[in-house]
Image (cartoon, rainbow, N blue to C red; front, top):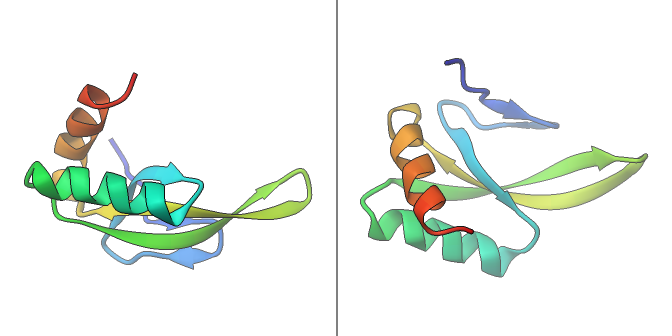
Length: 79
């Protein structure tokens, strides 16, 4: 499986996006959930191009080796 390390106009280096949310409070909550479950996580702001509008989004970023575990954690905690 190939994971993207670039989204929109933002370069994240070695990190890969595990989740995208609409606001800072949600980003902090998701980041803390991952950290509480042993997944190293941080946040990054990105812009998503939709219907000719730029919309700010927040991405929770993890190292590639933690991506599957992050997915598992997020899957267990979302409906």
